[in-house]
Length: 329
Image 1 (cartoon, rainbow, N blue to C red):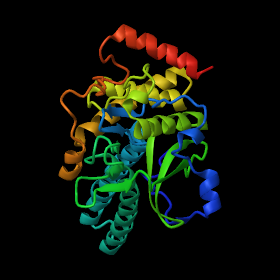
Image 2 (cartoon, rainbow, N blue to C red):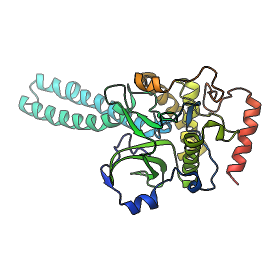
Image 3 (cartoon, rainbow, N blue to C red):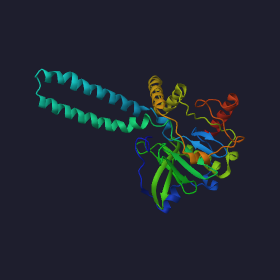
Image 4 (spheres, rainbow, N blue to C red):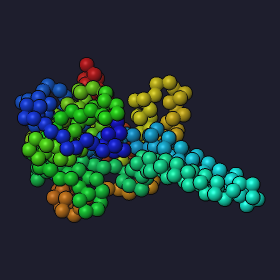
């Protein structure tokens, strides 16, 4: 679940030609299979030029790992100052504790605190004051994939659509969680890795996302199913964070009372995280390559909150319900 976000993907890695043929996802529609094309709530923008998918980690932002890291850090920092400056230092000034003992105690406590802060930084530092999301752009006109990482130099990974190697990836800690994984290859060696869209615990949704992308890149937006709408919103609002928190807790918590306590905690944490972050901004050359025609008939509407209406809310709801029933057959 946290692979590639709090913990880096493991690269380089070797793939033999046989493994690539066996494990890889083919961009040939004849070989994609009979699955229904569906974005599985991973799509955030779509038009005739490009589509943007959400990053794999958007769902877990401000989740339990972040809450735990923040709470433990606050407790330890407060305990450090209480122990050193409230409990021990006054006794040193009164001569009850030798100064050399205090220095030893201070160094040990400071070392422990520094070690804990370095561990927490991996989680908290990845969450706060970064970006609200890390989109992946598939430009069908230039046939390029752009993976946003940061706004600085080298902050966007770019790989040609025809040269990227895709397969179904597994989480490092939670190996039952699967995602659509892309690799940049140097021969048979993986030199960089990225993940696309939401994660799931079965292969079917991953294959549906893959077919959705392949249809778009190879045949265009007109080839996509007509009953699909953009469901995901990256709007930084309290309502949107609540909806995302409910989705997160529905995956991992089943007991109603406990679930709603954590929904409240995660909603607040997500809101704080997102408020501290800025919107991702693509480099000017990618913006230029992503120009949208003013009269683009295939520019999809975007909801103001996840699951919200785009045009006709009732018609969209009925279409989504019909699609859900079809996918669950």
